[in-house]
Image (cartoon, rainbow, N blue to C red; front, side, top):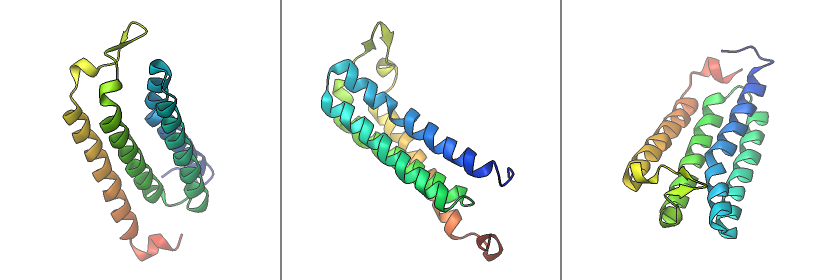
Length: 137
C-alpha cells in the first residue's frame, strides 16, 4: 500500500478520473446531438459521483475498497441507464471520427458494465468483511 500521505490524494485522484472519464462520453454525446437533456444527465452523474466519491474518500481515507466499490457501482449503473435510453441517439461517426458503435453491440456493453458492477459489489463485500485488526486503523 502507498504511504499515508499519498493514499488519500491518490484515492481522490482516482475518484476524479473515474467520474470525469466515465461520464464524459454522455456530455459529449449531448453536445454532438444538441441534446440538453443528455448534456445535463452526463453532468449530473459526473458531479454527483465526484461529490459523493470525494466525500467518501475524505471521510474514509483508509477504506479504498469501500470507495472504489461504490464508485464502480455508480459508474456501472449510470452508464447502463444512459446506454439503454440513448443507444439509438449515438451516431456512427462524430466529427469524422468513428464512435465505435458499429463494432460493439448494446448486449456486449451491458455484459461489460455488469461485470464492472459485480467487481464493485465484491469490493464492498470484501471491505465489510475485512478482519477486525484492519478495521481499527
